[in-house]
Length: 321
Image (spheres, rainbow, N blue to C red):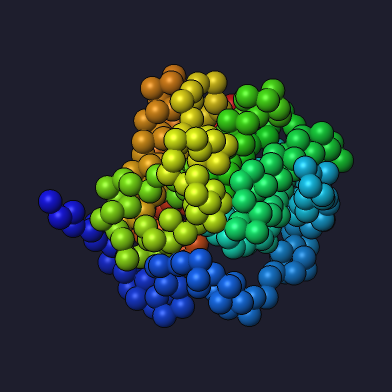
């Protein structure tokens, strides 16, 4: 039976019509280098720009990683009383793109509004650095952040992980790793449109093929870059693809959100359900008609604003507890 695609929210569909002139839904390994070159045309935000006229203090650090230093970008409200809760963030990019400065505007808003320290990690990218390099870099940075919280003006007892897309998958993996390795205690995990399942066979992956942003082919490309021939096979680590975890008990409370019109919808909904089944806490939002990363690409849309407010409310409740 043919599965019809979910329609996009009308306001987001209009934005997507413009975005598709620059962002294609389908990425292959053959087009990866050209896409990376195209993205370098856009300059990364400078420390001065991130500082927002001095409202934030920006610093750069390195954590000792498994194969060298792991760069960390730290953004802290200037002049705020210490210690502050800390959000440890992993950027998106399908495991193949991005850096610590990518996609952090919303988190900087939250840092100012709630009084948070934001730590963003510059992990190594696939396919040059396949699993476990990205997640091990992220874990090394997380351990360093917890150990150096005092010098960052942060409170290690109020530490949570956050990520979008591939970064959401890495954040979920860090929650599993911290639990299994007896690592830093986490108070929460903020998982936004997260890349969790290398099997790439859900209904939403099939029905949204060729549509929106980051379709089923792109997803296969990203997972193959990370896992090579192991992708979709029986021996994939849950630290690479958290949907593979057989035990989701003992994890910190999660906020999970995803668009209804995107590849990751069903795997993210399933992850929330499995957290509940394991006795955990999860708040789930499926944004009707949202394409992948809609809130980053069309931040002024009504649905994007609602998503932002829901995340902010969850963070406020979590950190007030």
